[in-house]
Length: 500
Image 1 (cartoon, rainbow, N blue to C red):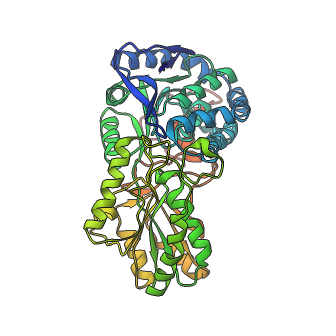
Image 2 (image 1 turned 180 degrees about the vertical axis):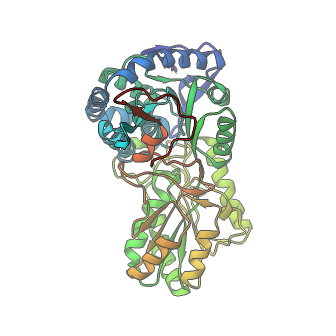
């Protein structure tokens, strides 16, 4: 029997009232797992009003007590790790080890946010003038919202709501309607950890819910992760409504392989970073750029058998599965169509996974790993973010050409270089116009106490996710000038104040 999912508002599961639903599939079988309610404007408004009413008391709770709630939340995540991972894998399709990693990387941001009392400290100047003290305060915005994608249904929601709550805000989470169960479970755990009802509300929905969030006058800030066109839309509409907005969009991540690189290490990195999670990661390496024909020939020769031998299957097939299905049939058809187009445009398809079939899972969204060689910048498989298990190889004649290929791409999320030469590595990390850079590290996702964010068309807004930037984004600064004069009042002064 198909389950009907809910919203989570005011500490309770609330049935949808719009009459609209979206099917939630098991991508390995193609079967409908549940129905997800799609909120209308009235339901979003009810969630916002509930959060708005709950937020002042939460903001008045001292930061150390709020941090204790997050500390308990981390303990509950550890307790329920396997349950969360199984639910995540069932709706998303990623392997169980990958699903645990999804939860873990969100948990680590919650751990960082336990340090909120220190991060929220203001600044103070004693004796800025005669009898004058000057100090600044960091205060919460009120109600914030997050619109999060399907590919990390645990991690990215926690990247958004953990710092927001630590700062004293209430939060409206609009997760992807494709895999909404884990976000609902996270809201339950936050309530169990001691967060007051209404401080974390989950509203499921589609574009109607997104627009309602962007237009609601009581929502002060919005964070988004998804494709670049939608990121631009959310940023533009949210900013026009006077909100603070940060949006993270698409990516085309390049990995340069120098002639002196350890090729076995580089191949291991490319296989894991290019095909893990079926390529449905914004930090996936989708373009390998070997420098020199000999390097390219050797790299492709080593890559091909590794890609051909990848183990593909459902999460239930064991811990040694390399990757699972794509999220939807539409995603499968899009990826297959782009591979077809790459062939028609003249790229060399070294490994063709289009006809992969898994016995017993014929209705699943499985596609085998694909490896292209001799890809050019004018091809659609290069210009498009494929978001599938497809790695393109672009041959560069020199380091400078490889660097130019990376820098000329419109996206700037992540990049990497594999080399044994420190001078080349230092030159690369200083010159490349990309937000996150790896040196012999293929997926340079920063740890929780640094910030995550790209450059160019991979980001819209000034502040990154998690780390210190998150506390800047979810607070505003109030600066106070206080004077306690001694002696007799001297009367008004009509000139601009200066320090003599």
